[in-house]
Amino acid sequence: GENVEQHPSTLSVQEGDSAVIKCTYSDSASNYFPWYKQELGKRPQLIIDIRSNVGEKKDQRIAVTLNKTAKHFSLHITETQPEDSAVYFCAAGGGPSGGSYIPTFGRGTSLIVHP
Amino acid sequence: EAGVAQSPRYKIIEKRQSVAFWCNPISGHATLYWYQQILGQGPKLLIQFQNNGVVDDSQLPKDRFSAERLKGVDSTLKIQPAKLEDSAVYLCASSLLQQETQYFGPGTRLLVL
Image (cartoon, rainbow over all chains, first blue to last red; front, side, top):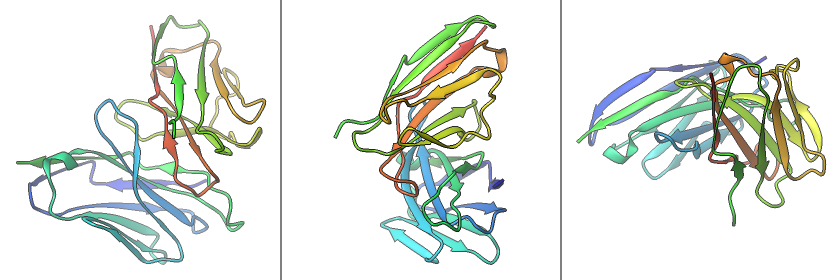
């Protein structure tokens, strides 16, 4: 099955700095890679996703890059704000049939943005 | 649109007791997921339904956990008997199709004493 490693487990930055979270995956058949933000005591919410036919995707201050050869993908947050403080999870899954998606999540990164 | 609904929100039971969780996905969503999230870890997929069929249940401890989605809409997850290590948040999520955005419910926080 798929194995997803996520680093770092904790990331502390100053407001306005950039933050980068990295994930690696093991199954070369995986083709869908979402990122979720989970605030304390709340449910995970999708913030951005990328599919294997795209190398990079951007949405305002958030971007995700995918390197299929190296089997890793990264979340980039620019101009961080205190409200970005949360736990971020990556996930990977999918298969050659195209429609299937059995997600495996990383262990999470606790991002702390200091004002 | 209404979100994913789950009940109960909290449950405290003693080990060896049984417990059931209920999930109502977003209307029209064919795919339904049950996850177990232990404190400090990422969600772990327990079972995934596509309509009323099981797509994957490879990580479901079938000796004590069961789940069903009989009419392809609501779903229930049951634990019988519960163990201390089952203490976790049980999240239900749904998506229109696989590889589409998953919407999570508020979760059920289970404490097994």
